[in-house]
Length: 167
Image 1 (cartoon, rainbow, N blue to C red):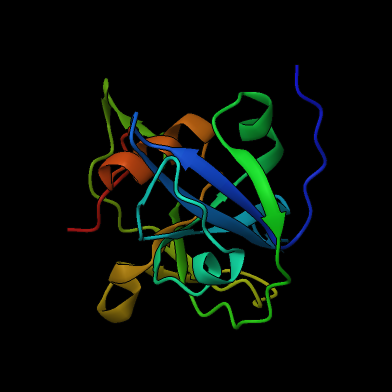
Image 2: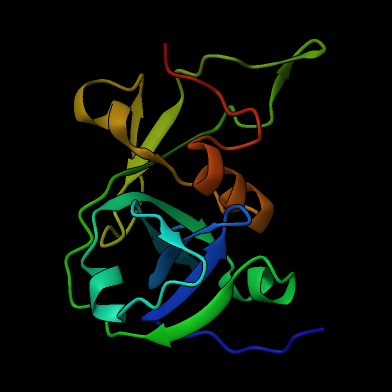
């Protein structure tokens, strides 16, 4: 088993197929979501053998943000730490979660929720909004995502689990 210590600013490489890799950076801890690691995943794909400067990686456009436990992905050998660059930017992303996540009606999971709440990393608490509307509909899913599901979204653009919708 790989032992690792992760810290804010760490940049990780993820192999997405035999020829391609992408990167993400651990940028914050979210006290509203189990004090989990917050990562930003970058859009650009690179060839496996390509040498990339950390400065170029962290200045790429962000594909998505997610909560996870970065050291679990290292231990599972799903990603590897490639360096560290202090993150100095603003985290201006809205997260969403619902009290309906995991709930069922009979033997069916709840498909559309009207029990949403949102937050930003700087918030002291959640804001209950009920139905999602406006900009809140673009909010990132705010649960702590398992490493394999992070890999799935990096590869396909979607998570591999069922999560309630808002319409």
